[in-house]
Image (cartoon, rainbow, N blue to C red; front, side):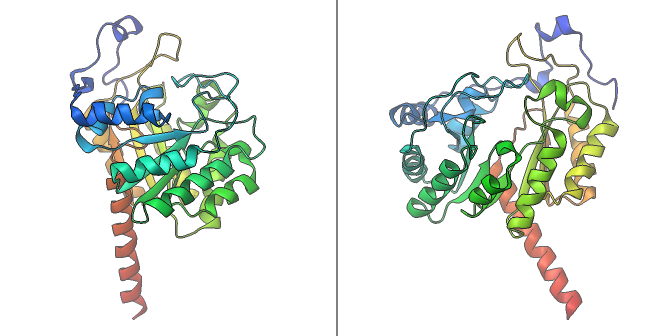
Length: 312
């Protein structure tokens, strides 16, 4: 795999590989959803993080990942396009507005993420938990995935969120251990692994998930080592996607991986025991999240049936 698809830094600004071209689609679904987000004064990671899949998700699948706790992050990770600085005061009505939007969209699966709020003692856990509860009240048949920061690694903060019982806990490892200090801000590789492990210990029946972006200079061996670390901490689902530099101020792409390489990585991940792995150039943490949680649930059911047969 090493050496395939490498481009020069100068070339990076001129063109991207064919498989990274995005089809724009601003149909009624896309425009209607964008209008609703503005009317409800809601933020989406789709827009704030300049996700390459926004047109597919908004215009075709009619799904969105809600970003709570405001639109300003207290961290300045070198890969992320979300605004950083001093955040605004908490909006305690935000959970209800998110829940109203989920109901209006009639979503089968809702993803709720947030900016990091290191200025808050609970890391935003209370608002996260209330958002989960609000969606449950208004859309009882919608499955809910949460994607928080490490919340400072504080046990009580994570417990507050897990006690609200989301259907899936997602926390991104982002990159391999060696590159973490250079890529992430105020986050550590080991803290993220511990965060995922503790979530599983608190609620063993809730699937955990993590995402890895590649193209930052990691090796194939480091990618596989990250898979092993995630599995050693009982992570169920993994997503792997191509890092795309959002602006010239952000860390540069070192390599564009070919779709065949992503397919190989997916096969390796599945051989490690993940219940599901989504891997591809445009895959992001919440890309096809509804399919991921369904696949994980099916895998869990099959494993349960196999155990019952063995016990019989």
